[in-house]
Image 1 (tube, rainbow over the protein chains, first blue to last red):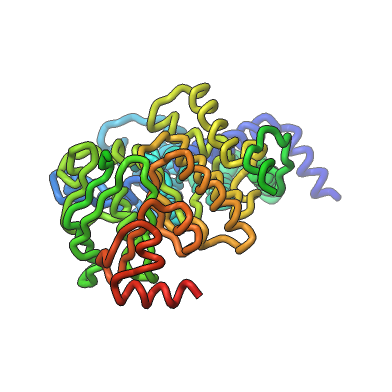
Image 2: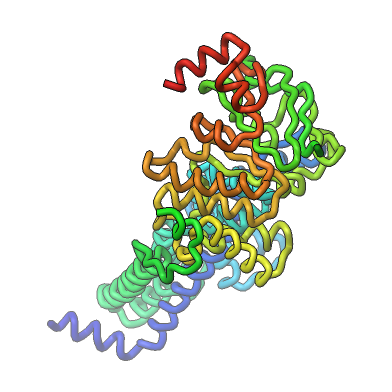
Amino acid sequence: MAFLESSWNLFTNNWDLFVRGAWTALLLAIIGTICGTLIGFFIGIMHTIPKRKKNVKSMLLKVFNFILTAYVEIFRGTPMMVQAMVVFYGLVYLGIDIDRFLAASLVISLNTGAYMAEYVRGGIVSIDKGQFEAAQAIGMNHLQTMIHIVIPQVARNILPATGNQFVMNIKDSSVLSVISVVELFFTANSIAGSNYKYIEAFFIATVLYFIMTFTVTRFLLLFEKKMDGPASYKVELITGNKLEKDGK
Amino acid sequence: MTVVIDINHLNKKFGDHEVLKDVNFQVNKGEVVTLIGSSGSGKSTLLRCINLLETPTAGEIIYNGENILNDGHHIEKYRTHLGMVFQQFNLFNNLDVLNNCMVGQIKVLKRTKEEAQQNAFKYLELVGMSAYKNAKPKHLSGGQKQRVAIARALAMDPDVMLFDEPTSALDPEMVGEVLKVMRHLADQGNTMLIVTHEMEFAKEVSDRIVFMDKGVIVEEGPPEAILVNPSHERTKEFLKRTLR
């Protein structure tokens, strides 16, 4: 009981710092997930442009897609903690004085983008070929087919993966403390140090992280259900059904 | 008679396999043409070559006096003049019935929303599906899906309607409702090119029947000539197997 009391006291004395830290973590996760998803869709679309005749345009596309693939492989194959150090201190080395929060947002977005690119590519590949053909048959070009027909279906199908990524981002934002972004881990760590209360501070951080991830997971499940709509359809009005009337 | 689509020396190879061999063939305005033949005879491939879902290996497809296989021809624009109905319906799963019939009109033909909606309703009424305007494809039976797919194609106001085995994926009791819609369209004077295995239906609606075998057109003519008095041995054999 003494532990809980001590934790509670630590929290009430520093609640504004904890909440601000948690908010920063959440904000990084939100930015990372949104920007990362956009990057993912962009790469997914670039990688699925149908190959037509060989000309300068298709060569440029090939080179560009190679660069995108390299980006995906590098960011998926290295720890985000290291990426944060390289990006932040790299920019400093180049004489670019970047805000720490901005650098953290950039790293988490690029990292998420690399993962989302694969989800999106898989999502596009798994869409029935008939959907593409039907869109082509009514005269849509590749971009129109993607925007109006394929992407909405892919977005729905990869929603669970996107939600998963969002939850991971909330947790993994903690590694961005290495570049001194004042998010929840960094906050907990400094409060722990200044009060000599390590276990209490990180217990509070644990609870706050869990509240955030649990809320987000529930919210996403509701959102998925809402997107799917009702399982059956009720005919509204039988009016002017010419063929139905004179037939059966 | 005005020729709408004129196909000359069309050839299609999948790798080394020659699916279409020097096919010459016309579709006239207001005509209902049925392509028959056993599986693998190339009839579906021919239909898919016409709207370039398959790219022909050689030959020409003349539409409005222009060879659409020439470089730089606007393929997307050409396709809007052809309405395609697929065996597997291929309704857009993310859109409801009404929007399935509107998306092409709005995004490709650049019609206004009101215009598109009015036109979509007109054809949904025609196929008897207007009561389902807000249903998603997953809510519909196969026959209903196919009728919506027909309305979607018609809503683009195409010159020619292409049907690729429209009833082959349907339960037997749903075949009737789709054929009825197609019969109605034929009576209205639409130009239609149909790949089908429904011989009775072909006999009834066709102005001309084309029999294909192993990638070539063996013979073509009015239904009676082809189905009752075929002149080629291969046609006779095919009919013996299917008209039992």
